[in-house]
Length: 492
Ligand code: HEM
Image 1 (cartoon, rainbow, N blue to C red):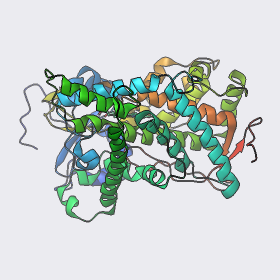
Image 2 (image 1 turned 120 degrees about the vertical axis):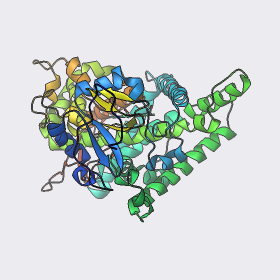
Image 3 (image 1 turned 90 degrees about the vertical axis):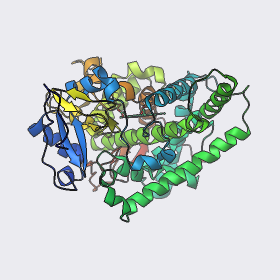
Image 4 (image 1 turned 30 degrees about the horizontal axis):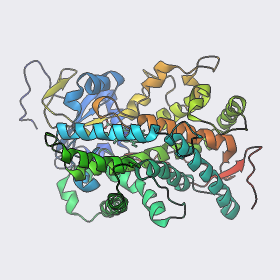
């Protein structure tokens, strides 16, 4: 490390002194988002730690992160070569793999266009503005029925368990043109294991950095490999079915459109794109995986916050009642009419910062930031949690207060503050599912809040401490629902 020659005019990165072999793993602890935020007080917004033998540059602060990801975007757009990434989609993931720039760019473009096409296409019934709205509305109503049933049989329910199936069904509809029953064991088990996935993939997992940890038996690592295998098998079955029934005159969903792209490319002899069929059709794995875990985590947190802040739940229901009433189901186009709900969602994103770091980045060439030299191929962590809790940007950053995003009279959203919340990353690697993600969290919540009130179990306190991972989850808990007036479940 000390042998790196620093070019004239640039400085060596500051940071804590590493121990031999383990580096700064002990200082990193179990909550890297907190320990790395704390370190900015000593070392500033750009510093270096060492995890195992490997140097990692940690970026914090709105200005530094924007400088790196937007102004110097090209230099910070790579992904590091991580041990765990090799197990995700056989090492061929769009989001995690070290694809060379051209290949990644071509795949990302395909993924974006497929997502856009199949979320905005006309729904089946013609009753909805688009297929996305249709899927969310249907799944929202199924979910409500499901929660009423579980309440009747068990008296309480685990919110994440049920929400994740509904959210998975929305992305399943777009990717595969089908949904799964809430009683489908294979899907229910698969999507309920995503916390084990996130624990290994989260920034700073030591076995990604310390080679000897990989040969030690580790139950979390075994589980991680097992989840990826099961996920791969589940996806492969759906993809095979699509190949068998493929008809280029009837492109049904994202998988069909990706298969079609491979066929088209074979006819085009001038094509110079070197991307294998497997890597093209495999894009659907990324869309499905990223599409259910993130959104269900956001929604599950939202429900838990509603229970923790009951007066906020009442205000949100009042807003829905005044603007939409009980005669119709909320729609995506109602978003501008419901500023308090929008503010609530932004505050969930900010306060929970459930994606504390982006997926790790990597420098594509020698570069510098704030006068510090950063060599090519350096792993870079982007601390979104720090930006969302920076007292330079936010008044009382630790208090949960959706009103911070509203004008004094509560009728308008403050756009500048809204854009300051960092949860989807920025620049070249920015999330491609952002608009779907925001739309889905909004519409599910509007439908749920119109028809249900959430509460805890009397006498039990809710623990809002997140469990660290790529997406941080709340602890599993039991909640209750009661119907809103006018939406009592029909007894059959
Ligand atoms: C990447 C957040 C929903 C697909 C990311 C990243 C973040 C993120 C932080 C990493 C950015 C970086 O590395 O700098 C979220 C949040 C979501 C959400 C908070 C929901 C609330 C979705 C959905 C999809 C999706 C619904 C797809 C259907 C992806 C993909 C990438 C990505 C493919 C990798 C992009 C790349 O590496 O070029 N997302 N996401 N995300 N997201 Fe999302």
